[in-house]
Image 1 (cartoon, rainbow, N blue to C red):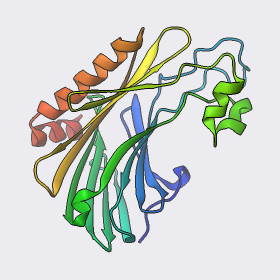
Image 2: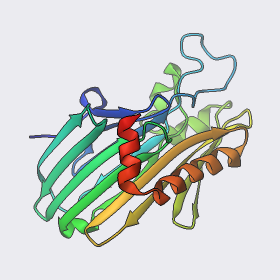
Image 3: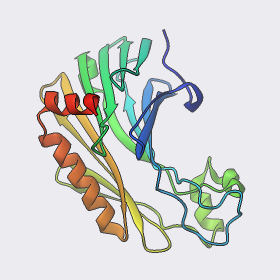
Image 4: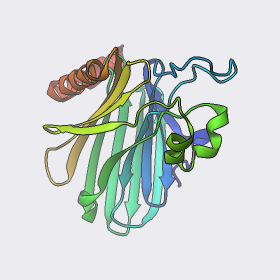
Amino acid sequence: DKCPTSWYDAAFLGNGLIGTTIFSCAENQLCWKVSRTDVTDVRKNTSPLYGKRRLPVGELVLETVGTIESASMRQDLYNAEVRCAIITDKGTITLKSLIHSEDICLFINMETTGEESDALLFFQEQLPICNESHKPYFENPEEFYQHEANAHPMPEAELCGDLHVLHQSLIDGSAYATVWCEKRSSEEKRQVFLSIDKGEDKFSGSEKAKEAVKKAIKAERKAWISSHRKA
């Protein structure tokens, strides 16, 4: 079995506000491409065909230690979750992902064997470039800022305790933020939490996203997942 290798055949999760597609984005990598429905371009005087489009947010990426030998993925519609099993030449990785139906949070439960306990998780931001005329910059987005006078500011990253925060300001002063955190209960077991929120300024969106992640971390796990399935 193989994992999907593009957005077009990816597994998907969402609660109407935040969503993710899950697929193999590169060799020995699995990614959760995340987005939020109300994170849209605020620039004026854009084409009526392409203006006010949703802005890309980024990808949470899992990079295995070893070479992937086989992988399988199952979209569980009844429980609104995605399960994935990966076998590499260094060990195994078992994943369960869901986006809570009521809380603005992506949750990933991860169990590993062998050297895959050192598998790397990182967040790869995507610059707020969306217009059709900007396609030439998609592969080299930094060039966009050298040619586009009406560009949104570059994102800013910071670490708040164990919370990774990525701020993305927009040219009208509003902003959105992605917050994620990785928690290990043992060498082989870890859980990942991610939220996206927006606000009227740089900090209001990040504060709401931080609270969503903190709430999910503190919740009793079985009860929290049960509330997701019952909603």
